[in-house]
Amino acid sequence: MLQSQLPSFARKEFPKDEESYNAQVLIRAGFVEKVMAGVYAFLPLGLRVLKNIERVVREEMNALGAHEILMPVLGPKDQWQKTGRWDSLDVLFKVIARDKKEYALGPTHEEIVVPIGQKAIFSYRDLPLGLYQIQNKFRDEPRAKSGLLRGREFLMKDLYSFHANIADLESYYERALQAYKTIFTRLGLSALQVEASGGSFSKYSHEFQVLTPNGEDSIVHCSSCSFAQNREINESKAGDLCPQCNSPLLVSAGSEVGNVFQLKTKYSQPFGLSYVDEKGEQQEVQMGCYGIGISRLMGVIAEVYHDDKGLRWPIAVAPFQIHILVLEGQDESANQERLSKAQSLYTTLRAKGIEVLLDDRKNISAGQKLTESDLMGMPFRVVLSQKTGDQVEMKRRTESQAELIDFSDVERYLDTHK
Image (cartoon, rainbow, N blue to C red; front, side, top):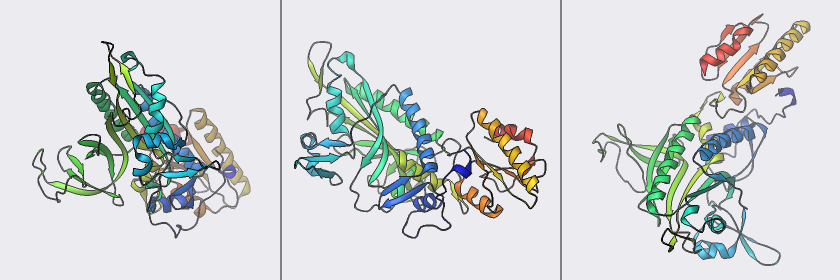
């Protein structure tokens, strides 16, 4: 994309009405815009990041064998009454229509997906079944002050699985855990698999937590093995011994990026969701649910991947892999020659399937272009200027030093530095 054709929403300063770093930097860099507390608009650059996260998540859900659907945001009151959550779920947004009927804006979709599942599940031959969607959710959060980490409207992937028995549910659950680990690794995140309370479903559920100083959760985890529990079910102090390996425990702040539950018959039972087994007998369907916050992930990545100059996106989620900057000098003919070379490089890289942003803007100072480039945080930067002469200045966003290389070596540089 040519930057001269990209609307710029970047600001010179951080917004003063945001407490969380992820919202501050994403707004300043022009990725999102705050509409009100807990509600953000995703601008062209931010939407590209969201779509990249979606792509990774979608690929791994499809590899798991789940089928993508899209459910409505608006749900009827009676389906929420069947599960008891119309009155018990305190974050439920309720809407009254002009005909005085009441509806819910979905914070999650068990009440919608179970009746949908009933249309396809009759026999044991129809199981297991996995249905997922990527869709906006709504929660009436009392304290939406953590930017993209805790919103009132947010983008989420929710998967629901249906099974003939507990053994099949547990097998699928383990496969889903592995799929989640793959997702977070592909996104460049080191996520701990953390035991958390299972509520009324089971003894434990599992969360995936990314350790970050600004995280809202407190995680008790081992310095040597995989033991990790949410502080809500483990009150150990730092330095206490791990119950698995006797190494010292750590207590760290973390941000949740995913969670999985064995629902069992919690939601199938109220709707009478059952199937006929091999003996011709009716059996209740066992269920699991698996959530990933897509927009929340964007905020967590911003919290993890940044420095004092701005964002440093991992390649898998960056809006563009390469940022080409043409810095103008006093000689107009030399400026035009550099622009022509940059356009040639831009065309060559795009033909290779590489996403490129070319800063071809005129009458913008070198300082402003370089500052904005650091703020936006593309993984690689190529600079053409009077100083670079017949070469280009190549630099990874994560490194402080740039190096001069020939035009013909740009692709080789990219291949060796990924």
